[in-house]
Image (tube, rainbow, N blue to C red; front, side, top):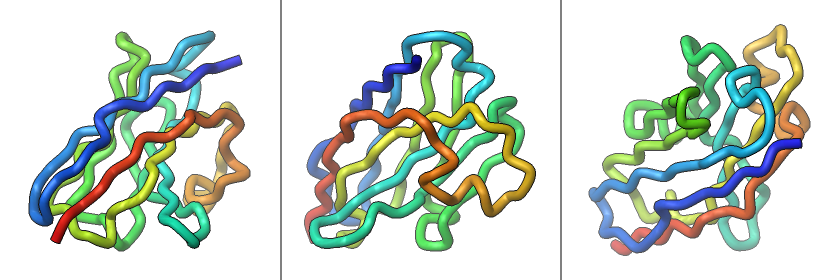
Length: 128
């Protein structure tokens, strides 16, 4: 079992930055693929970014590529999402997710069913 707790959300002006953190407790954090998803009011939860268990490979949604960076610190059992050049359309609840499956295709990192554990989410609000 893995418990995930997100933090770092808040209110920021457009063009600003935020850094989200996701602290994991439980076993074998370093063996889990980690991801961030987000959900805006009235919309489906969507993929934002993922990082492979070893930390060497990352994946991004086209909408955040070049602005967001996902990293992980396995010694601290924490994954981060650095969000720069924020836009009003980035406003959403951001969820951290962990998955223990071996994923053979890059496309698998983008789908919700590849992740077994979810945090409660942290709110990000971007004012224009």
